[in-house]
Image (cartoon, rainbow, N blue to C red; front, top):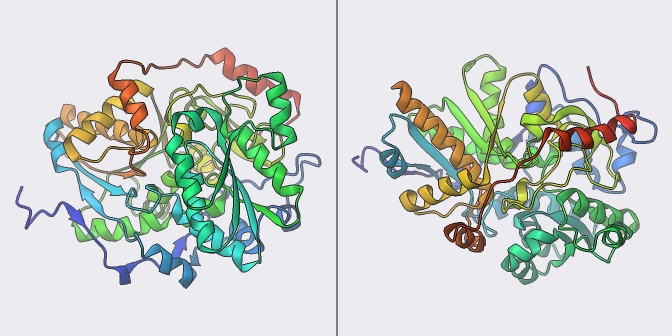
Length: 462
């Protein structure tokens, strides 16, 4: 290819950085169902969320406005790494011998190496505006914890992070990153909360999960009136902030004189998937691009979208959150200890769940070994080592590119490379030594955890 006529990297100038986030709820034909109070089973009001979040984030959680202005102090910090590059994967295309055109939005250029600062900075800003001095949060693989550590120290806010124990052990340098940015981090379940102590008493070797870590972080926040809680995925306002990714990508694809036929993102709770896909889904919802395929890719060891049930469930393990309408495996489900810690979550965000239920998006599940094989091929062709979470998007991209070759059809694929894997080299080393394997989740295990929801009387929407 001639680099002069076919550029590999497409950049937006800083003055084209989006000035507002896109709220897909405004264009959805069926709005997400409201969260419910677990005791009354009635919709929550703003006052129910006030102990956890600053009021501006609560407003963003429930707004129907199509666009929400990005505060200028947030945009100023965004400029450190945004706009992020859109890259044409020429070398990967060549290795696959595919007629498909493959583009990826690279979010690994942020200070913490993933997409997570897009909402971390915004959430820290709004908390600081309300005078909050301390925040608690959870983190799976550590991307969110490190991003929020970076953001909170910018606004002089203390941070306590509960990191899923299996990832705390697998990724020690994530803890170091958090400490550099003044974040305090402990493995979850921990001895700092009643939730953690109870779980450890029952199972001292419990590897932890995002659901447990969320329970610990919320417990600590609700017991202290001067502390708020922050979540890195799932909730509406988090997905809203991430749309800066897709808004930039739309402009960059236009600059490349290209339009995606398929948009792909890996899926844990929904943040990076929503970020890349929602601005493109707008065209599908409005009937401008009816054939656009949008695919959320999850690990087949935590298959809430592909094998879960759409119903109300807790967002955490112990049951401290509101009831959220979601595709879920049940809040008691314990995901296997895969290396893609950010995807080890039992449920999905309400917006994404509604879009899947209504058929506007697709879901796919990828085995752990297939994801590593995809990550290696990508690293050996494009040079960037993907995070274990991002490998899943790469794996689905390879499936689509190979299908294009089999069918002899050219199609344009866009995926979100949500983070680099330089802190995850231990996982790659295990894979290269043949120590990585796949996990099987049985129908019986899923049914057993869903049965708990029936016993608790949680509603199943029609």
